[in-house]
Length: 571
Ligand SMILES: [Zn+2]
Image 1 (cartoon, helix red, strand yellow):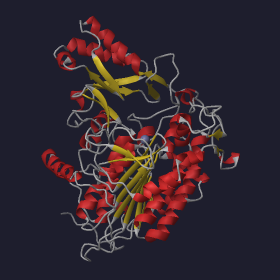
Image 2 (cartoon, helix red, strand yellow):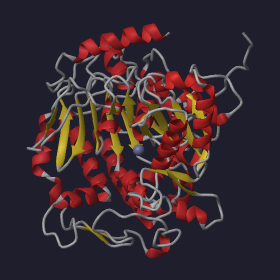
Image 3 (cartoon, protein in one colour):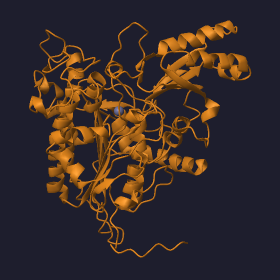
Image 4 (cartoon, rainbow, N blue to C red):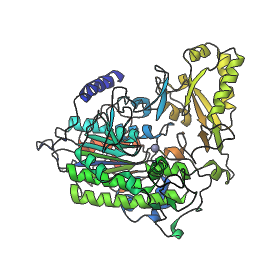
């Protein structure tokens, strides 16, 4: 199974060298291939850090796009990621491919690369070169070359038999790239003061024109105020445990003026902009321009548009999931999505497109707000874990530093150390006991506990193994206690964000899945589902085959040919 996946990938990687630069005109497709039921446009919307219960808690604040989706879509209310590494790159790769990280290889936003002995991001590609639109400076190179399986969008353009245009937008490279896959006509993200892409993808003239006409700094001087009456918000106005971006108070209004006292767009301004609803509105307008300029949904085949809204994540990290900032961001996103869906109805045609909305992960409440309820909550200081490991190994005669890096929850030892530890069980046991002794640690697994996705009754171990990929994951993997936030700051020092995610607990794993459009049976579905089911379901609607995937077709939400089905016959 692994070999055939490798061959498919190799074939795809070869294809990448052919430039995707030119704007591909739609080509007619023979009738036999273009079934009437097949959508003309697939729209995948990821709302970064959208907890499933935001719908249940905040839907009363919505009047437009989010309301329409909740009422007219197939809503999978109990969808959750079945793995531990609930991070952005991982979630986007899962939605995009239908494969869990144990198969896709996307185990984190960044991991320790044992070969180069460096931390690498999930999209870092030494052979690629990024370039900026409208004079924006670009650094490094990014692509999906570390993604070990084809994306749904890759398979769609390969199998559809007609021109498929693939276009994605996000503030984050890892979101735009994972949604677009190995090859896209355009994958566009924000870097510094403007929009960039990589030479692995195409550059489209309309994006250049839009970026020139609408520089981000145009929003300098705007102020983010509450968009709903004060009585519409839940919880307290001032979020407990929040850490606001530089230059901002902990409550409204939030002026986009950079560092206090500044008079022009500085680095702090771009941070504030990304942490505001204005960036979501910008992405929506970019997506609408793509629909217009490329005529998405009007070609001979099935086009693909991916939009990942990142500001919801930045706002959530700063202010926490109960803040008025999060609620207002969703109230405004509701309006943006209403505009986008209206635009799709008018331009692509109602019934011609299918929308899948989900999130890449959820988020944990701030430790301070959880502590107020009497729950066991706090900060898990990663530097303390590292120090405890070094101290323990010193007593067994190991030279420091024995730990190369702790990235996310993964402990990577310096070359040769873990092999030595495995031959010295007393030392390894002592290290694991030391890690378990750090406040906030629930457990720690050895790499060999998690390989080959072991059958076990422990849901946490299953979740950890579903996001374990031997070459990339740690030698040891730390499991935090519920409601304990992993922080990179040492004990006694303040942390750099209000809260976070990345654990095997439901507040990080549970996200919405909303499917709307032709072929979808609307309703509320309470059966088990994961975001890995989205790509196989879209593949079924589009009549294509994914070579490998962990997800299933959400068949309960697909229209049946006949309402009076014959009784099932065992076979
Ligand atoms: Zn995210």
